[in-house]
Length: 366
Length: 82
Image 1 (cartoon, rainbow over the protein chains, first blue to last red):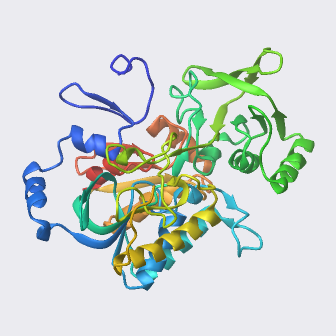
Image 2 (spheres, chains in turn purple, yellow):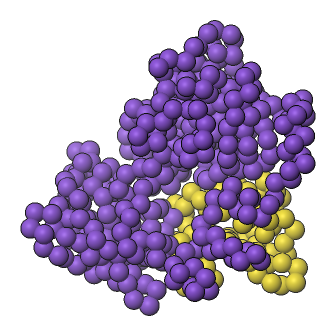
Image 3 (spheres, rainbow over the protein chains, first blue to last red):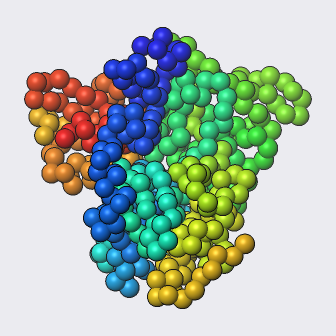
């Protein structure tokens, strides 16, 4: 098996009868490889708009921004379908605790917040389809979406796909994925009861998740490339754990490799930026929180403009360069990557979408 | 419809909720093994999946063969329980 995949140990790895090997394929890649799309059906839907499922609004994503937009559109009786390829609630749903979302004096579990948003949107009639949108075409009055549930048409599309956690891109990161290298503390932290960990990153997410992981791990080395850039509240909280000997913070550390033996992570190799000194951190596992990557790959072949890191560019109405396609939340260029901002943008997008559907002109602006 | 489905989960895992939601929406029953409640079964989850993560979904077919799905992976989960 390892010979087939150049020794890379990645789950899931799928080997097809024709010899093709796929590692962690997306739904779209798997659908294409298995030839699950019925070309005859597709041809028919391309020529007969009346037979294709059609909605007023299709929202791509079901995170806090998307769910908020859906609350607003469905309350206006605008037929709204959401597509979610991952977890409903997005990254908020896999965040242990959200402490800066207004209205929750003691904070709220990310999963609970996500479930509440979903319930609220569904109460007004939003429908969430578990699947993936793989392409988007402008057909004038309607936008055609290629999805894992077949082609669909929408008068308006809202891109609210948010972001995923970014990889660091060092040797060993892929090799030990899910076997010692992780990106979801709430999912995988429980496997490190009584063990030692490294958490890589210095932003709010890294600090928040490092604090959460002390529930399980006996000690955590927090490896930060420059300085800690978290909120003062989180800084104060983590310092209590530093004083208690549960966490050690290492600033100015650049990661070189995640190394291991016998399929298990044993250490992180790094370099101190100031002195170029090589250092090793013996640990049983590594959690990575070094920033976000926008989920905008599925529109890369469209006319929708994106910035240099792939975030979608919008005008003041949150409309993209494709008329009738809006973008909001973490996917939007200029977003502040906060849940409170995302829900606010979701509400704004819904109101702008209503204006668009009512025929008020929104000429795309450059 | 599978003969049996077992999901290894933890309390805080959002992706575990998605697997449960998907199965419930399809009317498929399942047994849940919450590793926060039964940590002694963690080794079993690792052995089945080869990974230190949840959710791990074990689908037992009519012929008693088993398919193990690691993570919330709809492309694998949907055909496995169809």
